[in-house]
Image 1 (cartoon, rainbow, N blue to C red):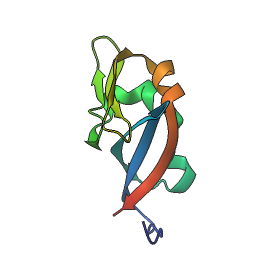
Image 2 (cartoon, one colour; image 1 turned 60 degrees about the horizontal axis):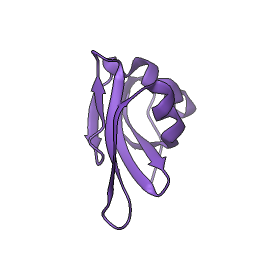
Image 3 (cartoon, rainbow, N blue to C red; image 1 turned 90 degrees about the horizontal axis):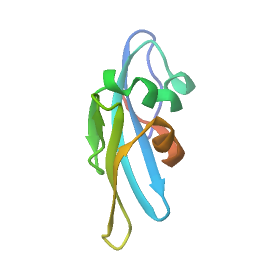
Length: 106
């Protein structure tokens, strides 16, 4: 994002969450609307309320299993190898969270 200057009023922010385990990485994005901006949007507790948040895009097939209150994803290394995580719980995913960033605002 070259410029970050959200106008007063209602904005939509696209937030990117990066996960990593060893050399394996992946990401997913969500959108948050409202009058919040900056650090107020960078919430590491997203996984506690994930069932109510829509994933906009993902390179790791990040999915929420509402019935089991768990998560799954496939992380990738630079050599094209995959690492599959199935039935991860909130604390597991929080341990893999290495970055949260605003990548777009409209």
